[in-house]
Length: 329
Image (cartoon, rainbow, N blue to C red; front, side, top):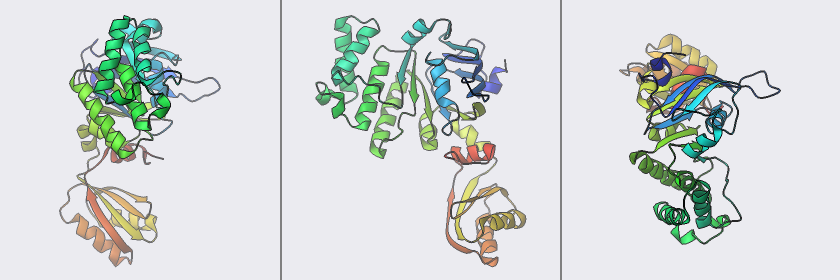
């Protein structure tokens, strides 16, 4: 097993962590490529931990193995010290799951989805009734309590699935692409709920391909691609790792590969230059005078500069520096 500091983005004592994986691997039948490849991971109690990566990176398979829905090919996964594969029934008592698909029971009302979930996890009828009432209040769904789940918008359905996931007070809540397909207002509302739950001590592991979501919500982020973790740390430390102070984006007309080569040759301080749709993006170390020189060199080479913007590095820039491709590719 790798040293804890190598795989967790900070020193973590042995045995510490509400979630721990050791060489966790999944190869689906008929495939010769691992969907998850030798995963070493520790999630600390009380943190929001994010798996960030494009579709097909292995995020959903990882969550599937940690929640007993997918059987690993090899390796181990522990949740609260419980072996997930050896004790799947006990593990299910410790986890709450809100998947990206709508898994609400269509035959039940909004309130009944919560009430019967409580009964399923061993609550008495009185406890389940109280929990359902409280959760409808907490998640602003009281007026829809007697309604069919068909009456809910996408954002409300996602809130109800999260409420159901925490109904039995699990050790960890797993959220797979929680805001995929939601409008911006619903996304912000869900972020607020997740932040509040975490402030109350709830451990949350979420998968996402939205860099802003990972940056905003997560205490630590593991960047995944092709089933492997490429980098792990706090959002701030990951962005510092690319050795760039600024990302300059320039909208230009002309041959982008030619402009990339020109700027890398002529302008000091550019650590990475790459063509993007309608322009170029430059990772710059040391901003003094670089912007002016970039524009001057482009115009001197008769490129028509339409727009220039400057921003701090993002998690997508980290992904690009590690893989050479954009997160959404």
